[in-house]
Length: 84
Image 1 (cartoon, rainbow, N blue to C red):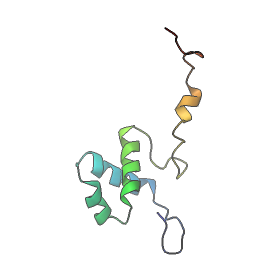
Image 2 (cartoon, rainbow, N blue to C red; image 1 turned 90 degrees about the vertical axis):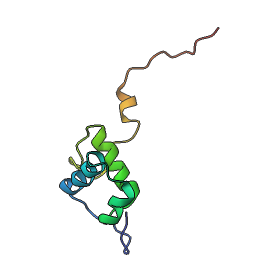
Image 3 (cartoon, rainbow, N blue to C red; image 1 turned 180 degrees about the horizontal axis):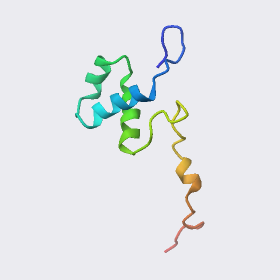
Image 4 (cartoon, rainbow, N blue to C red; image 1 turned 180 degrees about the vertical axis):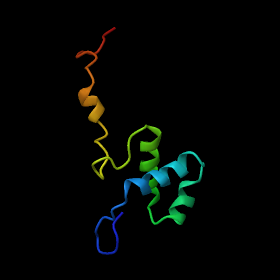
């Protein structure tokens, strides 16, 4: 989320993990957490998704891997559609 100057706010990995764990384990509503912390609800949803998938939040990059990154590494399951 951008601040009034249009810059991204850097959040530490510890802060991201804290918010994500509260969303997952304590079952708090995302809107409630967004009101409690200065974070947009969409960002909390992304951190929660990463937490559920077991990804390390904030490990080396502030950006998550591309959504289709795992597809590029997966073997292809056939080149032709089945007919009939």
